[in-house]
Image 1 (cartoon, rainbow, N blue to C red):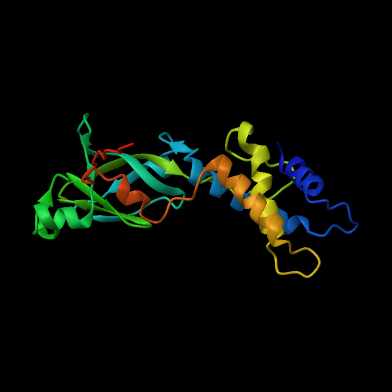
Image 2: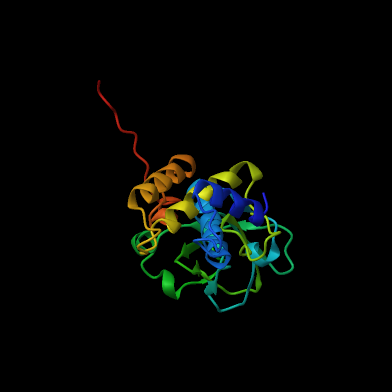
Length: 222
């Protein structure tokens, strides 16, 4: 569906047939952009493995920290290719606490990178590379471009498009306006969006995907 079609559906569902409309297009553009990003995170809908801008970082000798592409929020593959080599070396994504435990002097070590620590916007390699090369990354991201014109289409699969309206209904009915604010309708729309795309993961999402995380099987008795 195009953004124009999504807005038309929103106005029907929101009973917004007024002229001028209760909610201006500019606000709806922003909310549909937010809705797509929210859906992508909750449903892990956009996995990137081919875009050079997202998936490759030029590594310099002697530098351990690098900025991640702004769209990337969860990494599930890392490998380092030294300049001149033909085979990548796997790099394990771990936590800072894990590195402190197994190799207390990791901050001073140099050589071939074996581990990586992901923070909110950056990645830090250990050991600090002593050779230039390329870090290859795969992982989940949010959409690369905002929805800014009527003909734009969400990047997520078309089967999900109509459900984005629920997030926009939630946002619209949550605006503190005497004429349009409706907490009940906002709550229903928010719940419908959550039922479809799932709960939003917390900020520890990345930590739950690192290779040093312990996993335990828990018995449930009836």
